[in-house]
Image (cartoon, rainbow, N blue to C red):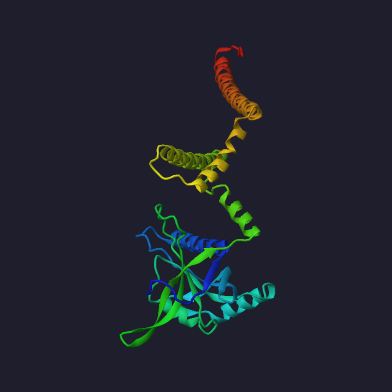
Length: 306
């Protein structure tokens, strides 16, 4: 496999494609785990589908995707299903056509080239979008790789191989709203509003922590410049000065009054919630005591005093 592509094409990938592939993999994995009979864990399943979009000159924009019916034993595709799907998409999006296909896995495999060649009668130069479903906390980039196919001569034999291509994420307003909605959905494992609040506060804490680190960098830079340890650059000083001019706005008297009012309101709500919780607990205790004392009084002929 070559390191990078030399076609000169520019790829733009929309988030809907990544969401579709992730949803496809999650459904198949859940069904596979649900059908297991307690034996050894099965390897992660692979899913397959087509990616559709438009190509304008040297720019390829991948908008959407749909699933493929693929037989891993015979390595064959359901042609009738692909043609039916393409026909349905043409009715709604007449400018969309099949650009290639997608799959899941850590790297491209040799069997993937058979699917790639099978789609060449639909698109003479299909693209291959590979999503790596394994979680790597240290990875900061998206686990998505786009491959093209190029004809290389290996040991005197011309062969098609996969080559990596760079891409950018392209979004429209509807996609941004949808992705933001998905990101704020309530967890399916019974997560409560407290869980969502904790996640929200964690995000705010991370943002404040990053802001603090950036301000420290600026402070150390200015101190070093003042001591003459680094040369003075007027352009950077102007940018820092422009940034610092915004800071006095949060030190005004109006800001302090608004901040204290909101802070006091928050404390008041917290105290009211605590009192409400204590009252509810006390009511439960009284109800339980009355119930227990009423049963005891019936045996002894006495009545409850609460």
